[in-house]
Image (cartoon, rainbow, N blue to C red; front, side):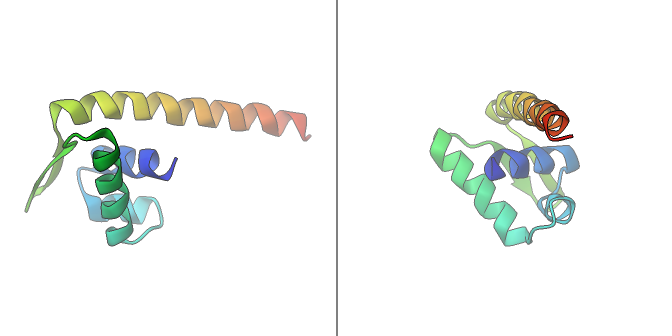
Length: 85
């Protein structure tokens, strides 16, 4: 889940450093999460430049699914919280 959240935040912010701040992580940790996800999927997901990052076409597909997964995780957590009330 950490890779999914890190990648999602990078695409949302357009910056690895901003994603790190948002996720309360270090910049190297976020970079490693994204790199691990790219290796796992065997695809380049981000175009990196000195002005930030933007998703590749494959990255846009992955981002779409990351968004769905994160929303499902949040929905599940809300439903589980209702059980413990």
